[in-house]
Image (cartoon, rainbow, N blue to C red; front, side, top):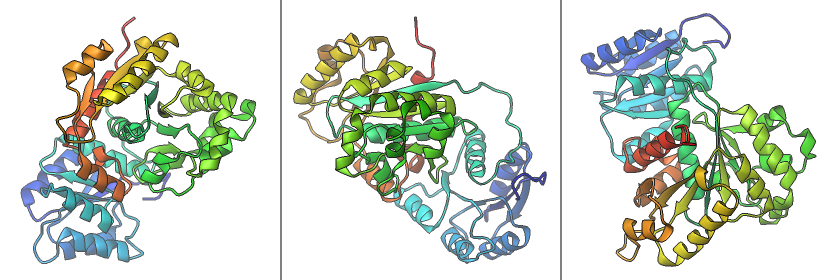
Length: 390
């Protein structure tokens, strides 16, 4: 479909199960989409070439030609190579999802799925390729929030949590602009994870005079990930860390992003220099990551006290992230007793999921939406978007 045209959006549903085709087709027709259907791979390729659908929902397990081969042929043909594809299948193993994404799928949806999730995924993928979407149904509107994430030491999962928070917010509010921003020059962890080498967006803003950093300039520094998430990325050149002293610019960046995006997730790292203290004051909510390690807990307690001193106590949510399966870590009860608080969410180890997500530059919650990681991230997002008690 040509952007700006009034043509209806066409979605091709490909599945050898007729009941699935009817159910999915009916769900999407109610949203104003025109549905095309195919029950075999060859038929799907013919329809795609002739009708040029705006999106294809593609099953994997089909006779004669499976979904993997269909998408490979779609991507090999210049006439169909740009059509977005959502793999829609009962195959739920991580390896199957990785294979689908590596074959060229834009998204992966596991059967059975709730109609609301199906519609949300379809809208999200279409948003990346066109601005002509059917009007959103009336419902709760997205709020606005700047969310800071930090830990008492490095290697505790700050960047990973930022990515998963951003991806979940984008999934829940596909109509909203969601930005994830790295604020530590020379420490481009998110940029590397998401597949960008030595990004310069943050550097360019930090080198500009603070009064010249506005929403328009900040918007131009953002890159759009294949998921639709907007990213302000730091370089991974260690010598760029000298820009950390640009406190006025960093404060201006956060203010500008708050005007540009509905939700802004900030990677604040593992320290509180002056620049980060000023940013902290502009955050609506702050997530402090807690590692269940007795030695790290000493540093976490000190970070907690600093945050209290800086007036952030009522903004904080606590997320425990455990990265290793061991009996040597502290229990939930011991952590809560040490810090004098209740943990809001607990993330259990998911090394395989983390590895597979990094391999294809994707958020863990997008690769495995039914995982415990995704469930806890959703719980955290729900808490973040609730009004704070006064």
